[in-house]
Amino acid sequence: MPEAKYILFGLALLLGVPFGVALCLWVPRFRHVVLAVMVWSTCVPDPTGINFFSRESYRAATRGFEVSLTDVAALVLLLQMLIHRRQHRMRWLPPLTLLHALYVTVALVSWALAARSLPVPIEAQTNIPYPVFETALYPLFEISKVVRGWFLFFVCVNAIRGEEDIRSLLAGLAMAVLSIAAIAVNARYLQGIHRVAATLGHPNSLATYAAMLGTVAFACMLHFRALPASAAWGALAGLAGLCVVLTISRGGLAALAFGFWIDTVILLPRFFTTKNLVLLGLAALLGAAGIAAAADTLAARFFAEQDGAEDLAYRGLYDREGQLMAGEHPFGVGLGNFSAWSWHRYAAAVDPRLDPGAPAHNIWSLTAGELGYPGVLVLALIWLRFYALAVPRLFARDRSLAGTAAVALTAATLVCQLQSTLQLGYRQTPIYFLLALCMGGTVAVVRADRDHR
Image 1: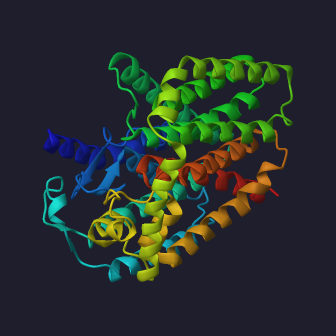
Image 2: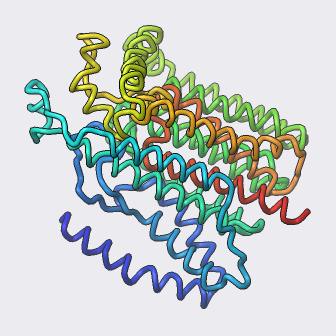
């Protein structure tokens, strides 16, 4: 069966890409279908992708060289735009490109300085079926994902030029909500799974992904004037919220509430209508009812099963590992190598009782450990540059769909930032790709606004 999947994916790549490009050229509107599929496919990475040199037993966010339907759809869009480059002027050097190149450069320096391999401790060999950690290979997995994410960002910036493109992006996000909600509800109520993960691999990953989608859907609910469209987006926001509740994630619930709050504070003054007031009241009642219905499960998770303060203190030990790695390795230990070095040295150095091998959950501590403080600096510059572009759009009082999309997508990145201080966040491929799309969509709106001035 795995061999068949590789064959089918290879045929899809060799035959599907030319066919998709030809169809986009023959029926120009088909490119909107490809754009929507590119967005939707981020929520189903395993069924629609393959993984080369897979190291599934290793504890890291990326465990192989991955290729998925998302990449294929992005390639189709890029080739279609290149063929039509006279009608579709390309933005060859969009904002953040040079900073992403600098980030990859730091990652390559870190990889070049990393140890070629580390021995797997005897106590770990019952769970890890190989004698050494391949610390020269794991960073290449992560670097390939960074490059794929930038490629997705680049395609998104160039593909989104008008309102119809934005609608296609939103359609893909709506499809993703429906997909993960159907799988999550089936897992919880038909299969009896306590904390659902849907297609995202872990409940916390699903919580982050769903909170980002819910934030975009909630913004659209406030934007659309017609009640049917507004109610439909409100229902999608509710389904995303249900997914978060089914993960029983404290951070996810806080992130979702944060996203809804940003949308309301910024967009309600722009779209202050009786319809929106009624929908906000209804959303509050339904949200309260949903939480009340799940009160026993949430209380058991949040208070009986796990003490919040103790959990944060325990996670802080992993952050301490990252700080020690950064202190002893100027360019870190290499992207993806945190777990190997945790087993090899740093878990015992921080606390002998610490479970070794788990990466730091805070993205900044994880980056410090794997890329050193140069990596932290470049990552901070990427985000500072992005928000320097995005934040002015939050206060533009633009009532167009593009203006609302810029607010919604920026708010979704902030949701991800919050979750990435508590979970692995955007190191997970589906979340990283969704983040790239949110950033690309926002930058596309900003660039289009500047081009029309």
